[in-house]
Length: 219
Ligand code: CA
Image 1 (cartoon, helix red, strand yellow):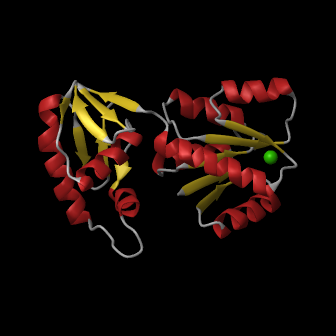
Image 2: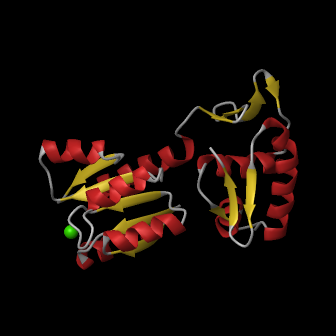
């Protein structure tokens, strides 16, 4: 699980990043909204922790911009702005959670865990083309007809559906499919994607390969 931490206070950023890394997360830190916008467009983060008072681009402006671009990464606002009006505004701009400073590290980490659960199992069913991706029963169907997928094919499709409309890099795909004991090669991913595409294209689901970059399912 990879987290983008957007915080211009180096002391807060360093200590929070250290704590999160200690809990096993991969953490990237940026200190302003412009760099953060570039980062979320190029890296597949599982969650974003967002300070609001930032140089160049305010945190709320960053949030509005990524939501306008349909970047759906879960965002937790972490800020000293603590009035209820500011909380409402933050959530209405597209944040998934709102924590005020000073914060308790244990609570923040619990909220991050909740956010990450959201990023992997938010919807119970997703419709793509004529197909329904049922995330509760873990099957793909067209109406009542089940479409046979191998576990690996399902896992690849699950990653693509969770990132629908966004590019999934081959590196990201490999890291999500691999565990410490067994890594999945790029070649194996290409073969699975090729098989998936052949199975799904008749149903109108377009699985694009963007050469040298990765894969994309259009919404
Ligand atoms: Ca700040």
